[in-house]
Image 1 (cartoon, helix red, strand yellow):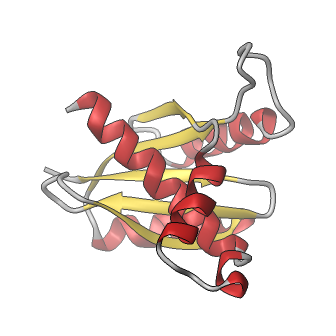
Image 2: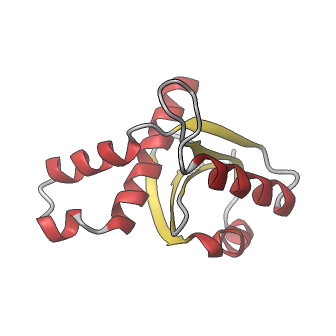
Length: 137
């Protein structure tokens, strides 16, 4: 059994979260510059077995596109080209960044820590992954 990897893709930064090999626990992995995503994943896949990538697709409540929808779709195309054998699923990512900020507040992080957009993206990817696991297992 391999890990599930979640991607919270943004124009500048991409948050990444993964499950443990038994797919029980979702954990934030890192945040990287978005232009380094493919190279990062190539290196990661050398050392870790991943069986599925989920990526957040930002859409409005009426299912119309947001400013982030097309960049996410473009990233999906790049992922499919780089990893043709890897299954990729899109998931709803509405409000994950707000949920991440709320979680940071509940964790008692200081104001400066809560302003760390890299941490917000990583936590948002983790929330997406947890929601995926809850709805699909």
